[in-house]
Length: 396
Image (cartoon, rainbow, N blue to C red):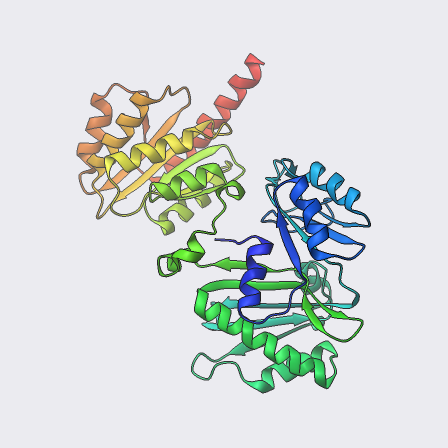
């Protein structure tokens, strides 16, 4: 679960990580009032959307008058901000963060993330802050400095000094960096965060370090331990189908293809999507109904797939281990009867009660194609999707 910038900065303040003074506004009038609250003669208006690239997309504006703040608030609030990371539909802007400008001398990058390869937390820093760190890693990897935290020892002072030297900081700034890194380390540990990123971490003209931006990703699996953090979720920033899937205890991720996939088990789901691509198709989603799926949950999963207008064919691939294939078949039949199905459906059932499940599908008299192997199923669904696309083009 991602947090908005203003929410992340509120957590930063709790852990004594310096941030600019700011006020959240949800209306143009509130944005105008923020100018009086903050004082000064200039303000930064920042759209609160959970995506990168806001500045290039017109979501971060330096203003010079209260009238300009109101003008930008009216432009942004209620709009959808499209960035290179948000997709073509963009994300809705419902809140703004109004901040005092910061006198920037240098821009740095600093993050703390879970390094699964070493099973440790990893600090990553670069003097090339304010840029896309992926580009820096690809073009100038020598500018990226890392240090891993042994979970038994915790963050050590020498690690902050090492990164500080790599960033070209002076002794006073390295001391401040150590305090800041300690705050990030405690935040990640206390809040079960998987990523905390500051880009840029700026050095001001008077030599101070300030987190000008803030990104925090929390581990969804740990949110039961943090109801206060779980309450910060903003459903408007998430794919509507992914949010609905979570409510039904389904693992769903939207993709760009046109072949809907429903599978039980993450590994089998990945293999299914690989086979679809191998046979020339493009998956429209990742959907794992889980090992203990019920007929009702399968029906909801099926409806979820069909709610995507891009989907022109559906592949259902179930291996009955814990879950029974006859229950899966009952869910498919229930969903098909409740929804007006006009696209091809290919089903492959294998394992517990697979013969019974296939017989239920045959007796239902529904227009469902069955397959005996995953390769056959992938081949059939790709062919069906291509035929659907050709038919749709002919109608147009």
